[in-house]
Amino acid sequence: MELGRPPQAGEASEPANASLEVLAAAVNPIDRAVAAGQFYGGHPPLPFVPGCECVGRETGGRVVWTFGGGLGLARNGAMAERAELGSVVAEVPAGADPALAAALGIAGLAGWMPLAWRAPVREGDRVLVLGATGAAGQVALQAARLFGAEHIIAAGRDANGLARALELGADEAVPLDGDFGEPTYVFDPLCGEPLERAIASAASGARIVQLGQSAGPTATIPSAAVRGKQLELLGYSSFAVPAYLLAEHYRRLVEHALGGAIQVDPERIGLEEVGEAWGRRGKLVVCP
Image (cartoon, rainbow, N blue to C red; front, top):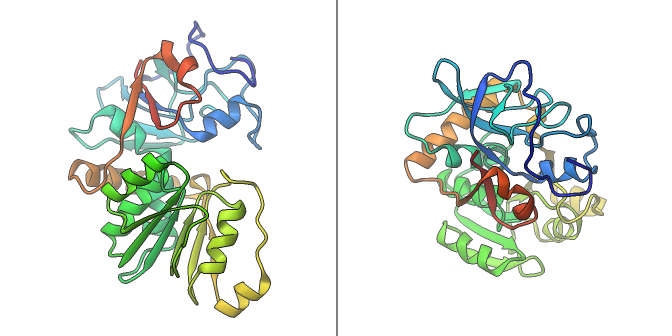
């Protein structure tokens, strides 16, 4: 593929250690950033195969999810018929549909880990989920409900996504310029103005987990608000989490999905459809 253009299906040489038959590879914002030449870590040598994660079958028959180790970032990725393993490898729980299991990887863990591990939700928390119309945000609001949050506000731009957030368990759904209430916990994959508004609304002692910049790379954070409210501002990145913890929580998340406590809505596409679907909203999963 060429930087700045949607990828197109074609022939690529098979990696030397391509031990996985790819069953499903999710399309994530990081893949689009790498493809656009906008990822801070660069990109693999051109032309390259995108895809930072996949669910695949090993030679011995075991089905695993894999991520990291430069997959799709420094070397060819997983949107192919065969791929190499990343640095994180987790066995997929039996009975999980590969597309569902792939959709719960990078995006699912981004929604799950802040609430389950980085700053665990407490019973009685009033949780504000910014970006609640995306896959990570929708996992986050369901995780908040699972962990005992008292009240969950879903905030986003897309009306259909907000309606879905209500179906998934949010108590309220508001636009990003709406009333955020007085949250004790803020899940923020957006940064920019939404984070500024969340800080202004936050309750005394609120915890804010920041994990993305979909609304902008910077935000103005008033010292008076941080000091006066005794706010806790924490960062989260899956790249900074030990591999064993990611694998452990990935399996737990998929098991919750199999039990019906977590729902995601993947849209399956073939390799030949990737270019046309590249900019489409929703959780795309490539199934070769």
